[in-house]
Length: 265
Image (cartoon, rainbow, N blue to C red; front, top):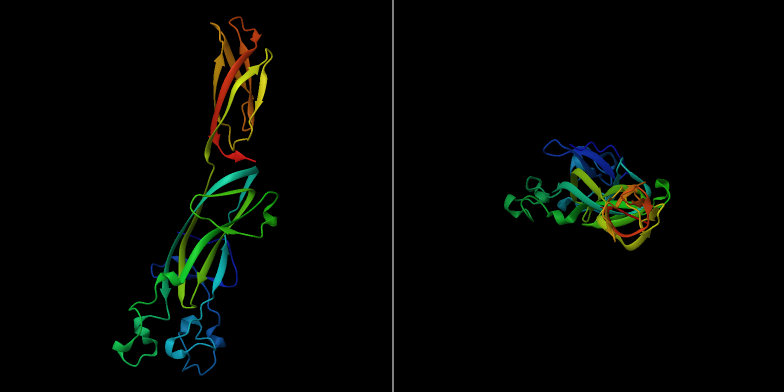
């Protein structure tokens, strides 16, 4: 169950849904205590802050904020700038609390109630996870973009937030879970017809990996008993030295293939 330990702006509130799950919702524009009129004859719905001054009480005019943001407590800080593959999943339901059949929306007869039995469609509200990235620090992140399927973002520092929206001031998203995942795409780097000196040669990858990759070597012109030793393997490269059967360093030509994850810029 989500705890929502991040920060909410003034338009977003915490509530409980019908399944008693903690949910993020957009708050009302006006509070019930701020509505005009007698307490015994309030306009609108008590829990929704009444109706604003421009609403038509007969139709229970909407009072939900247009948008708001929840910022995740979790951030991402890498050791360098990488191309990062991101995914996001939002768990939510929606409800038009102004358009319930029992409210009647001011209709004098049960059969005269307008609109769908249980309210407006979910398309009137939404929630999306957004990401902001920067190459130098978390504090520099001020702009965000929606995480689409298979989004690839370049950066070293990342922040995440959820944007809740309401298009008609009535239908409210109830977000019960938020999830983002971070992946580094699998990739291969190769080198062909490279020469190692008798004392060994250090190879630096064109682009570093997020973690040390697996490295395969194909030596050329190898005599019986020749072998090689790999050392100093890292995210950025490796050292290779060839030896003959007498354990004497020799020069050889070779190819390599490094397979790992992440593209360091």
